[in-house]
Image: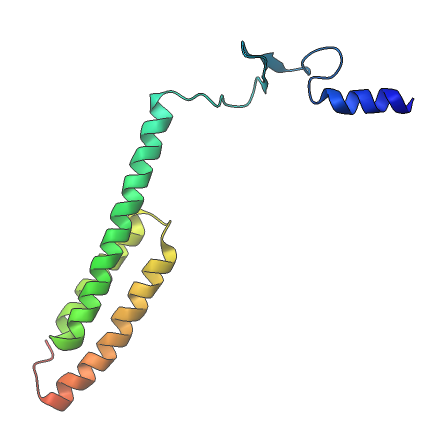
Length: 129
């Protein structure tokens, strides 16, 4: 009995009598479920993966622009650049949700530099907007 259990565990998913029920044998000898998508994808899936990756990259670049707007508002007109920076970050968040932490960092930079830049502008008697 133990030898039968050992031989069935060594046989893997195909078992002693061939592929499991509902499985499709591929020409190379591997088995896959009929209801699971194939590992070999067409151009549709690969192009959607490429589009998603480029959209994620564009989102990260937009978050970078938001951080840049936050840094510039520290030195030049914080009440003008803070809303623009927040709109840029919002656009980046709507593009893709992959870089959420970078978006949160951008919001933190914009908010913090807004307060510090407004304080500097009041202290230095510069224009706030």
